[in-house]
Image (cartoon, rainbow, N blue to C red; front, side, top):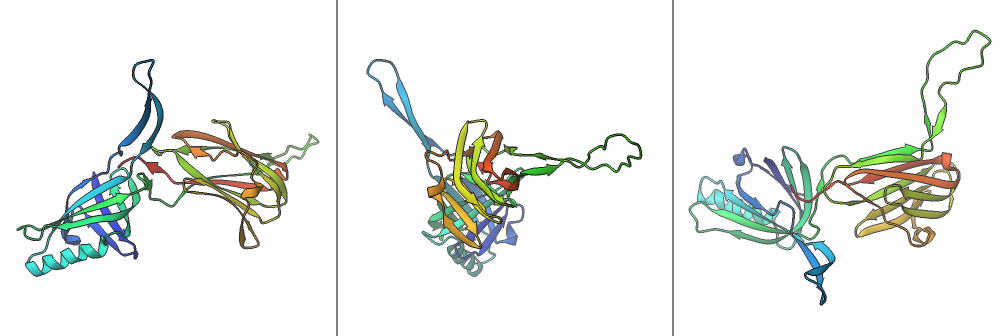
Length: 294
């Protein structure tokens, strides 16, 4: 069940629509369409020698959310103020963030106001607002999702006094941790942001998706304190070096024909290696969780 809708305009001003308490905002949400999985376009090629056609490609179209509001004013003057207030939060052509909270999900999507149509002469005035979302997937709202693993990780410690002549028993040893499993709960595949932090010097780092046999190699040296940040997110792919507080583009250090990783629903096993200094590296994978619909 939908509980709350939050609209944040391009100026950062927010309107909260509580479906259970419409008088708190002055608007009752009558309907919202365009929240389910969006329509896909399937491209095929006809064949002359067999029945049917051959699959070529597929894409998901933009999302169109249509929100219908009832203005809850007690008189004509108050209703007019509420109508004009919608122009503030839904200015034509401007960007906004559409955020929605349900019993199970808290997600948002970026859109642009296509139209705002008030029914001015109705006895119970309404406003129908159309929002076009070029990227059709919702992203989960939370404090971020990441998996971090280290070149070295302590095992355990146990207080023990060896008073005899037996060989010493070693506790608190370390072992090399260069693999981790990323569990992804979204509906839609998503890119990731990999951060490699150098605790000491290292050289020629390779990253692997063990499930898909994909890989990427970053050549060259890392100095103590360096960070390499790799984004495989759609429309925002880059490889950067952060050194002494300055960012630089190091796409030229990426070995030829790299794979730009994506997370699939469920388990995703990643690993990294380095020709030198592997114990000096910290490795983090960050990602957004994407939904096909609410």
